[in-house]
Length: 176
Image 1 (cartoon, rainbow, N blue to C red):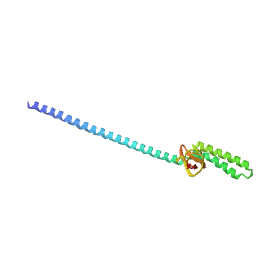
Image 2: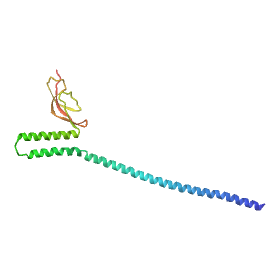
Image 3: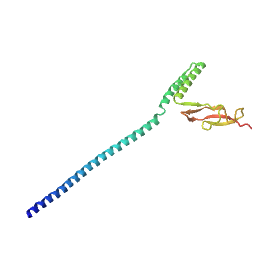
Image 4: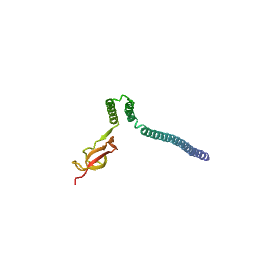
């Protein structure tokens, strides 16, 4: 009987140790798996962070380049105008009509460059004074309605619906 109890005790010990050994192996395996997962997630995080920094740097470079070269297209349009004006100054023929014709063509080149650059004239003659687009520099007696532009002293310009320079106008005085 004692022999039987010893065999049962050994079986109990074997059964008790096996689960503990399996539990230890399972815990070690689980810890190793979690450490591998943490390492993988850390690598993914570092890669994502590096990619974010690269995108941020590229966006900042794009903004700097956009600011630096924003006027490039418009400036290239103005080069033809400058060339024409320089040729007019070099003209020694003394023919006024030829010079006038050349200046007229140069003005057309400039107007075309303005159109491509979305620059439009503000024409306030006969319009009510708009302080966003016009600058009244004086008043004068006129048959026109009060605060209406009667003379343009200097044209104004818009660039893509934003005032580049307000028009300087003389407005009609209110009738007393």
